[in-house]
Structure formats: structure tokens, C-alpha cells
Amino acid sequence: MSTTETQSGSEAGTSGLNKAQLPPGITESMIDRLTGMVVAGKAGEKREPFDMIEVYTGDLIGQLPQSSPEDVVAAVRTARAAQQEWASRSLHDRLAVFERAHELILSEIETIATLIQLGCGKTRRMAIEEACDTPMVIAHYLKTAEKTLKPKKRSGPMPIITSSTEEHRPKGVVAVIAPWNFPFAIAMSDSTPALMAGNGVVMKPDNKTALCTLYGIELLHQAGMPRGLVQVVCGSGPDVGPTLIDNVEFVMFTGSTATGRRIGEQAGRNLIGCSLELGGKNPMIVLDDANLDEAIPSATFAVFGNTGQACMHIERIYVHERIHDQFVRRFVTAAEELGSKIGAGYDFEPEFGSLVSVDQLQRVAAHVDEAREKGATVLTGGKPRPDIGPAFYEPTVLTGVTPDMAHATMETFGPVVTIYKFTTDDEAVDLANATTYGLNASVWAGNLDRARKLAERIEAGSVNINDGFVTTYAAKGTPSGGIKQSGVGTRHGAAGLLKYTDTINIGVQKKQIMAARSGMPYEKQLKSTLVTLRLMRRLHLG
Image (cartoon, rainbow, N blue to C red; front, top):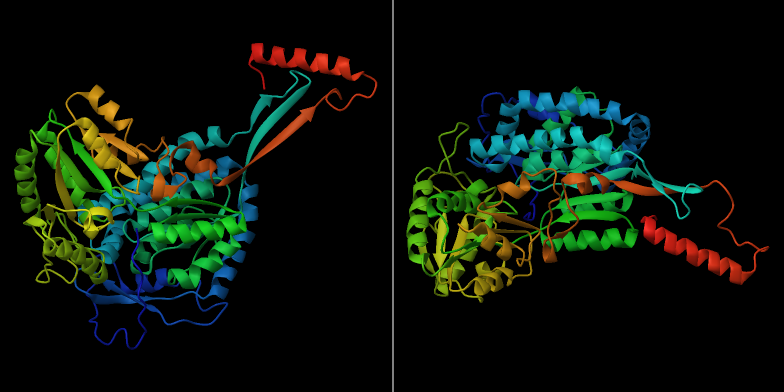
């Protein structure tokens, strides 16, 4: 999910901003070097730069060049030229680059985390965990890419005489449009399989959080990635996105359902593929035999991790009436304890960080304020914390939320959750499925068979049993994606690599027996065909 970006000019936009004191390891020259990687003002009209701020303080940290549509066309052209040479390399050579990149990312993980925090305002622990996602994805595909992409020879319609070979060829240039909530992990992890498959990439990071993505691409260059193969364009979605989609062969997008629908429509008109991970209103079901000693801390992270700014985080909790009051009491205590550790810092002391922007805080606060005005109860939280920083908001727990409230059905995308009561398993499933979204869900139970039976009925692309969302998302060998209005396509697993390829079928016929045979009477030809079809069924050929 991604909020609308706002641009500020180089003069008017900076007039009310202080110059930030940069954290250790980050220098002005480093920021200038990274922002200089953006394709902007080189092929088209020069745009006013975007003022990047440190979320903790609201102070200016630098200016990000903005790309014009002409710059986007030039970026795609450069990536396409480099892609042709890259695709001609052996898969072994391409993977070798990522073997080196894997170690470089691990070696520079502290710097990556700091750059993530600069733009997002998340805690140090969460920034480190985000940075670890890309090495996990790289490691998975280093082990599996060769087998997945290897041509597969299969029997043809006539054994021995015919054969069919399945090949996977790179699509060409892939657009990766990344969000602000996990800017390094999603941008780099989605680009990794695209590049391994032999594609070029044009990256569009969110303006607010572009620095960590640019640093990741710099590390790819250090690992031996050809210059030009990965291009970066920056700008507002409406200004840059349509031109980008019109010039590439595939689009990978993570963001809001509304934007994803527009991207899907344009990709469809262009007859190109797209993979869309969109919004969610993710439920958690807590059955009456759940172990609350385990469920409470896990639910706390599933709701409030990354300050609630995760596509797969939990916004609705349904608790069996038998344990409802106990769960609420303990969960509110956990939320208040977490709220006592809210703070801004580049160390591990704060355990609850900032929202990404003041705009996002206002969206979250509007959902809570409306719910309160219409009769919902705020059990804890529900207030901004300007004493800490401009975009801090307390961990918030609600009850009494009704369907006429925005938070009941819309994705709040912040540290806000509502707890509801249910009586039967059937009721819990119906409540969990009562949404247009279908990204993630969670079931807590002592009896795993009972939990699995519920999981089979829940309409979500990922269902976690006795976990919030980490188990499914960290399973890099299994495809992960949304259903219903939560997306199209998947990332991770073989499918997350093959989506960046065109599947080619090469058939060989050693003897001309399948063409129309004028010398054979039709009756005899039909009899021969029927015998062949029955033989194929017995031998499971085809």
C-alpha cells in the first residue's frame, strides 16, 4: 500500500525545513552520489527536485531528482541495450554476480538499515530485518534458479518420433515499482529473480525512501552487475508510471489496490504481463484452545510491527467468547508496554517507531477519530505523539467498530487494530472472509487439525497457523500473493522467477507421420488415431 506522494520545490519546499544532522555512516557526498544515479533531466525537461526528509525530525536530508516521461523512455532504452548482452551470458555467470551481492549486502547491512530508517522512520530492529529479506531471496534462487530455468524435454504426441522442449527466455525489460513501507526489501527482492532470468530492470522507488534502494543498486554494481542494466527513475506515479508501463515487457508493482487496478488495465491494453501485490484487511482468528502465552506476543508483532505499515499485518482480531476478555486485557497490556518504548533513534533502544510521513499519520488518525466519534471504544492509544516527532502515533486498540466506520473495511495501514468476539468456528470464518481483500490471515489454536480445517476455508493468499505473517512470507520456496482485491500473481518460489520469462515450446517431429496423409483412407486414419489416443492414456503420455 502506498500513499500519494507530494513534491516540493527546491526553493519553496526547503524554506521551512532545517538541515538534518545525518546519522553516523551517512554523508552529504554519499547522498549526492546516490541521487546522481537517478535518470532525470538528461533526456527531457528538468523537473523540480523532491525534498527528502528525515522522518524522525522532519529535517531536510537532500534533494532527489525527478524524472520526466522522456527520461523514462531513455532509461528503458539504456536498460534494453544492456539486457541483450546480459541475457547472452550463461546463467552461471549471472548467478555469480548475486553470490557476490549476497555477501556485500550482509557486509553493509548497518548502512542499509540506516538508509532505510532515514526515509521510513522504522525501528533499527525492523530495518535490519528488512535488509535481511534480500539475502534470503538471493540464497533461495542461487539454489533453485538453474533447475527452474533449465530447458525441460518432454515427450510429444507420438513417443520416440516426436518431442517437445519447454524453454524459459527473459521477457526483456521489467518495471519494478516499489513502495515506501519496505523500500529495500521489496525493490531488491523483486528485482533479483528478474535479473537472474536475464532481464533488464527499470526501478521506480517511492520518492520518500529512494536512498536505500539506490544504495542496493550500487552494491549490485560493485558485485559486477553491468552498468546500465538497472536504471532508476523517480517521480510521482501519474507522471512517470504510464510512460514506464508503455515501454516495458512486464510490470511488478506493490502498492494500493486502486493504483494496482490502473496498472493492470494499462498492462492489459499493452498485452504485457503484470504481478500486483495490493492491499489487505487481514484477519486473525483466536480459537478457545489457543495458547495465549504464545499468541499475545505474536499478535502484538503482527499488528504493530513496522508501526502497522505492512501489507500482511493484522487489522482485525476475532477472539472466541470464552477467552475474549482475557485476550483483550492481555493484548492491551502488551500494546501499552510497546507504546512505552516508542522513540526515534538509530540504535536498538526504541521498539516502536514512526509512521512514514505526516500524511500517513493524518490518514491513520482520521480512521481512529471517525470510529471514536461513531461510538467505538479506544482501549489504548489513539493519539499522535508530536512530542517525539512529526509522524509518531501510539499503538491503538479498538472495540465496538461497526461496518459504517472506515476502519472496519478500509485498509488503515497503521498501528491500529480492532478486536471482535465470536461464538462458533463457522462464524469466525464468515467474519474473516467478510472483506473484498484476500492477502493474509492468521489462525491460533491448540488443536492443529482444527486450525487447518479453518485455514482451508479462509479466503486469503497466505494463511498462517499459530503465527501472524512471518511463516508464510519467509518461506521463499513457496509462492506468496493475494487473491480477490489483494492482487494478481505471486512472488517467491519457482513462480516468482518464471513470471519474468516467456515460456517457449519447441517441438520436433523426426518422421512425417502427423501431417495429413493423402495416401491413407480416412477410415484407416481415424482408426489409427483412436488406437494412438488409447495407448497414450494407458502410458500417461502427452
